[in-house]
Image (cartoon, helix red, strand yellow):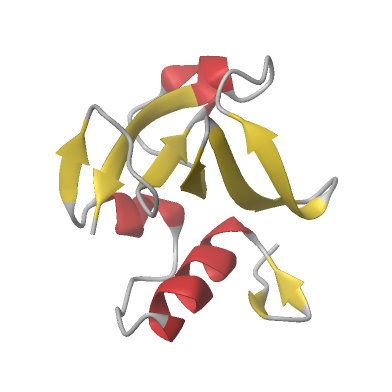
Length: 100
């Protein structure tokens, strides 16, 4: 938790770092990043996906959509990894996507 360097990322640290490499500055937390950008329904590569327990309105997790129904994210159990959008753990927690 709280990792923002390439040696120790949390979810929002990975997103912030990745977007910074692309020349875009984002806030530090998933909830603050969720306040940015435009809501999208049809995902495109680079869109940010947001997740929350029990579909709460305030996201606690953020990931980057990479196409082919997959996203990249950082989790405490697996570190930086890929997951499918229909993953049985993440799909029920999905609350929406934003394009920055």
